[in-house]
Length: 458
Image (tube, rainbow, N blue to C red; front, side, top):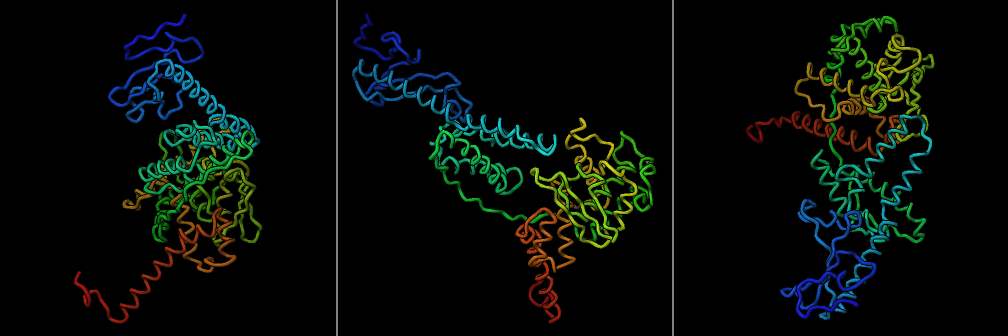
């Protein structure tokens, strides 16, 4: 027979008075100071806790608090029955969320996407690594967001609003931007996971995302004098070996040591990498992939790069050299390079050969920083040195030929450099025009005799 309820009580363990399927730690209790009704509470198993931070207070650092709710009655028997149904309702919600949360769809989606064929092992590894970071990157990964544990049909605009705020705070702390690029990436990733859920929810409406405002940031670049000085400094460091007609055997015989990265042969590699950037507007990620056979001349002074390893596993992209002096450099550079195989630091094993993925790029950045310290000690290359060189190549090309600023020429130049006309316009052309306007205004005022002393003392 079931036990009788005491006439006066403060807390009752439901399992002492009822048998059935409900949590063993389900309790009834009174909150006389806050409510006239009986309350129920229980602490779920850690893996079943669907609350943010698993119910921990103090931003996830405190103790886990139990679920609790008013049973809206003062009758003990009725409260006990309500408590059992209440706990079962939570259990059903947990099961539903486990079955239909983004965690479930991530498992299904990633299993399929990671098995899709990629151009090569390097592309496959990079795709898997970048995608995995979108899911479980520390703090910002989708995995760590409270709404990722909801059933997908319960995710809403406010969830995305809070998430974008988190991404923006992270970006402002790390690099001073509004995080628009990261927002775009994560938005596309979330949409892919939610589209996976349409198999279970054919009429699922993906919630609206907050608008993403693009923030244009003035990029760092070298001016023409600084660029010339940098190249001259590197020539001096390699004892002007880059000006000589060296074959591959003679290039390999240049002074080189593993213990000192600033050696003659490495400086030659840096010089060649910089000039390839200058003529072909390459990305930092392209530099370790470049192969000798990708660069072809037509015999009339025109070279092109058949970039076979492109961003996002896209099709082969043909990049033309726009500057007329490319032919002289390319003939000399090709002479000292292997006819087939990697161009820059060919002795460093690539990932598919068992090497570290970023070793080539890290060495280029290291040597570039050392060269800039020698000739431009006050110049800040920023957190991405090689990207500064890419900006330099674009900026000085557009300064040298304003005919590239409009129409089909702008579109052709943008495509050639793996970017967009809008990006060229906002990042380079508009700042060039603003600088020219300011210069012309100063010259006009100076020609009219408006020197600084005529208006204000400085």
